[in-house]
Length: 78
Image 1: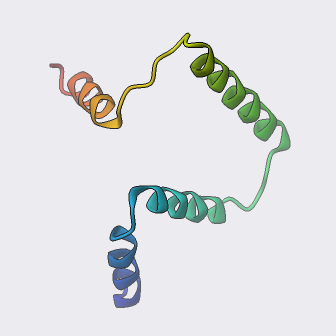
Image 2: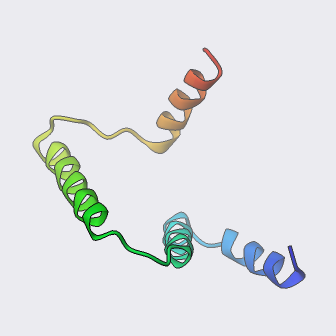
């Protein structure tokens, strides 16, 4: 990693979480040079389905810290 990239990363890590997530998404999108419209359509349907589940109360969101703890427990067999 060059000094310039390291400095940029250091600055990016100082951003609030929401801004870091947006930046990460933009960077990932910049690597994708082709768009499969059928995949995009299916993702849109899946997103709408999940939003409906949240709005209807069918599923309950949990904080990221709790999700991370649960994932860690699964991965480490606890």
